[in-house]
Length: 119
Image (cartoon, rainbow, N blue to C red; front, top):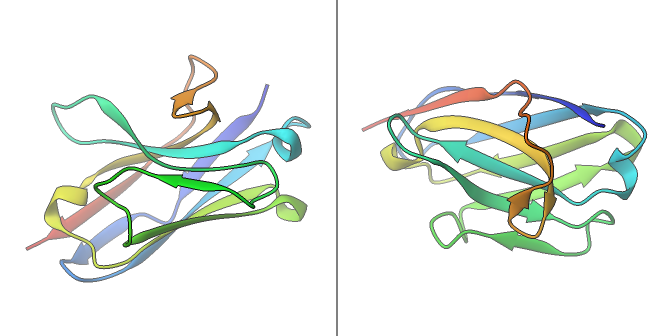
């Protein structure tokens, strides 16, 4: 199983940018498609972005398409989420996960990182 720790969140004004990182441990990372999810207060956790094991294929939720970019560095066991043109509705705790399509593969979640966008 893969252990995942997200970082890089913070408080930013609307229109600003943040770059999230997800450090993974475990030998399955290099062969695993990865995704970012987010959970706003009082809402369910939703898929935001996904990337294939090679990095050649990406997928985005409509709400973040054109503003967020997912990438990965398999040599560093790390997945990134570059978030630009942030909006208050992007405020959430962000998590990374091994995915199967747009669903998490495992039931457990690692440490998330809080992103707060002020208007």
